[in-house]
Length: 190
Image (cartoon, rainbow, N blue to C red; front, side, top):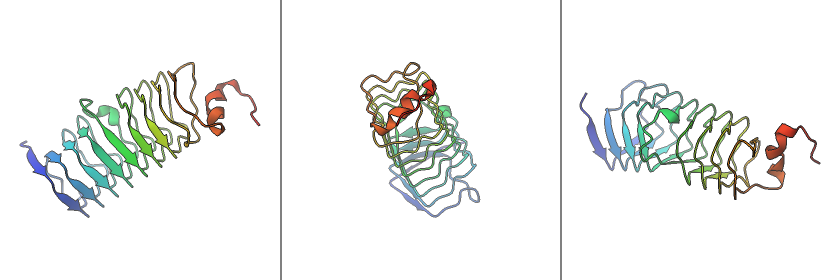
């Protein structure tokens, strides 16, 4: 299948479950109010693109490249970002629903998650050095052997992570969030 190369295009209000997105590389494009739900984006390349008010839930993103991509007000439920092309993976998320997604083993230094719902997200063995979790709900998110050095959790909530199983040197937490670091001890904090 031959790839198209599309640059500097605004793509609005399209339902790609009805009419497929052309297979290829998209650079500096904006996708606004588009539906990608449960479709295959396998092998697509997105560079310097924005997804605004889009639904990508359960999309197949196997070997998909996301380089300097911004997701804003998007539904990204159940996505396996760990299946993406890891080379130069760089994305930021604002006001997105990422519940049940996986970032297993990805390198995401300096990534920004702002006002996101991240229930049961898998961050096992992920490099989240200097990541920002700003006002995020991390209920039942999995942090196991995760690199969290210099990560900022000060305004986030509902997280639970074991300092003995993760690297948290110089990570930032609020006083209210301390309970999320001590959960395994089954102690009462008042």
